[in-house]
View 1 (cartoon, rainbow, N blue to C red):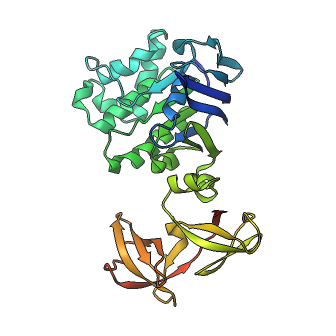
View 2 (cartoon, rainbow, N blue to C red):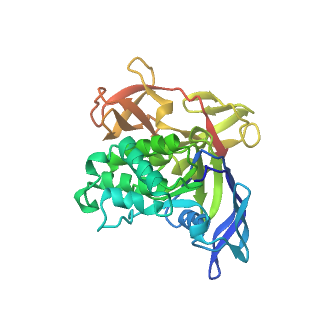
View 3 (cartoon, rainbow, N blue to C red):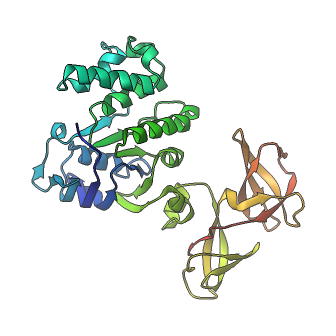
Length: 349
């Protein structure tokens, strides 16, 4: 029975034919932490996950779990000897086995009494006990996903890999289930990596988020930092909504926009007096009926607890605002707002 261990990737490359699909990826995922590889389709995140699992060779670099070398050029520990659990996109449950038997499958080399105790414990903590004798096809999608997760957790792997595990579920289920899965992984003390293209899933589950684009790891940081301190314009756009405004650098920590001066905690790029792009997130724009500045509602998306409004200012600039849903304004209606940007995100123009 193994304990969670730190995962280390050093300058990892993966190639299909002559194409480098993963290029120079280095990261450290601390034991007991949940990491996420976040990025659009085709960015290399699933290939990297498969390389960690031992299902793909690497063409440069090294992969370690704890002190154990898993992969380097010309050497690859077989997948079944890596101590890694994996939850696939389609969950891959055995249709002829009950829930209990599916979970027990990974414990065939355990002592019978230990295996039985482990299965019953997991059935209890995941509230799957009432479904223990059902076949997978008798369960909902969310229940099947839990069974797949528990089966992978059962043998207490050194590392758990989750490849888009929520992609076939309804959007309304994904975030809540991601939080449940996070809680279970944390209870088990596992190190885990999730692959997803959905930043909401990444934020709900992960301690550390790695944003991948074009085969490269653009940023590896805490979710809060990825959202509020993105390292590039493409990362900023991918990890959350927002719009870019023209700004003028007034000092190393102040930029002027059509809404006044904004202060940045970080040094603003470029020369003083030069122009930059300033990103405003919807949570930077505060609806205020008493504000002097107004804008016209040109679009609105109802999200339950709030509306995402697109507002057009008198100068024709569009900005977005996240507003509690009891403020239900009509399209074309003018509303007051103010800018309250605690994290000013700027990039060279």
